[in-house]
Length: 143
Image (cartoon, rainbow, N blue to C red; front, top):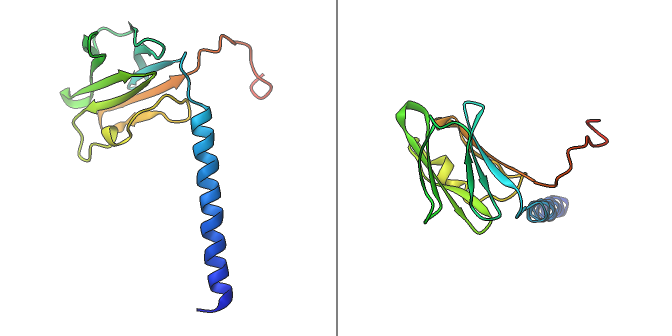
């Protein structure tokens, strides 16, 4: 390898590390403690979990199977008769049990950021975190 090749590789590694650090910083800064996690099944909201205290609101009773208020476990239906278990703890949520080929939902871990939704496409579930800023006015971009 030539000297320019080594310099190029080192530059790419440094730029990648800086980019990763900036993305992690944005993710940490976007976490919310007063928002809610909305569980969607086939693009329809079925359950809201409030991140402040783990309380909930059932939107579609047909798709919410059970709720354990002591351990903060929410069991909802997924595709093909499968169930998905969602856990709440310390202002964040995650999927702890589901049936899918590679358990992608469980691998995604905890989320409390609008920038990090939990997608469980084999079960047609998506968990989106929304901020409760109390600001319903349009912003400069969406007007």
